[in-house]
Image 1: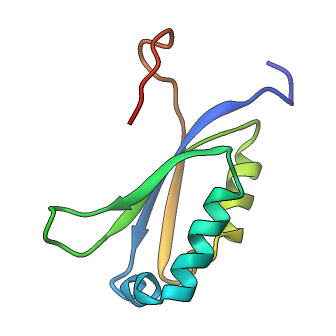
Image 2 (image 1 turned 90 degrees about the vertical axis):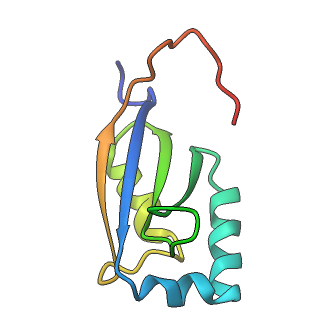
Length: 104
């Protein structure tokens, strides 16, 4: 694999309860959505909850870029990212059944 080839990465975010303030701010949410739309390498993402009635407790992203540093740059530039209220873990990821396309 060359430096320019993409890898798949999964980012698991864990939110402090105070992140609900950020999620509730329409201008911050709109900026976050615009940011995601502007970065097609962020293939899929969304909020996580322990159950449908609960508040969000984090988020999940699947990203296709060459390096971990590129993933970190996407995270830290996101308007939803506040390091004191949101932590994250980054994993490389390979999809089982690589030859099959999945639509969500």
